[in-house]
Each structure stands twice: as structure tokens, then as C-alpha cells.
Image 1 (cartoon, rainbow, N blue to C red):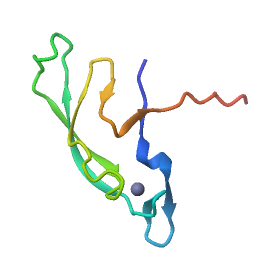
Image 2: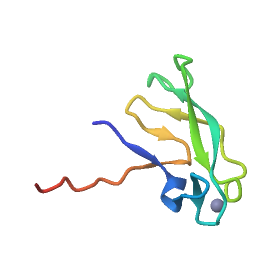
Image 3: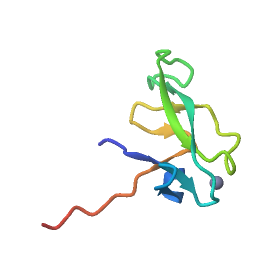
Image 4: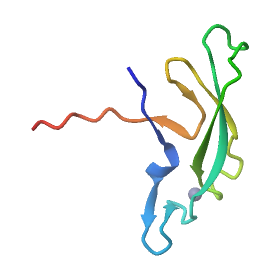
Length: 95
Ligand SMILES: [Zn+2]
């Protein structure tokens, strides 16, 4: 089973037609930060393959000025970074 993540900050933001950017609930326009996610091989928390996945994560410069620039991904797909939240299971369409 694949875990699906979404960005926490996007759920608190709306797409602004004027600026074509995402506007946070505080009124600030979201920015992007490059985050490095270490890929764990599952054997030991210290022995990784050394592989690092680079992601651009949206963040609010007002509310999250010190966004973490590192995190990790486990073999089961679990992402350890505060900007990622598990996507809510949505009910399948009935038709
Ligand atoms: Zn904000």
C-alpha cells in the first residue's frame, strides 16, 4: 500500500487569482524551499544507501520562517518531515 502525502500548508491556503500564487491563511504568499529527504534502506537507521531525494516544499515565510530543510523517507513510504501530512482517505465515488 502506498502512502499518499499532501503539503500541510496548502490545506491552509487558497490560490490567488491576482498573483497566481498560493496565499496562506495569514495573507502571505507561499514560497518554495528545497528539502533533502534521506532515503532509509530499513536495515539500520544509520546505514542508508546514501540516496537523497530532493523536493521543493511550499511553505509560508511568515508562519514557518524556519522550515526544516531535511527529513527522511522510510522503505514503507513514510515521510518524516513536518510539512508533509498523510492525505485523508477519501471515499471512492459511488458511481
Ligand atoms: Zn502564514
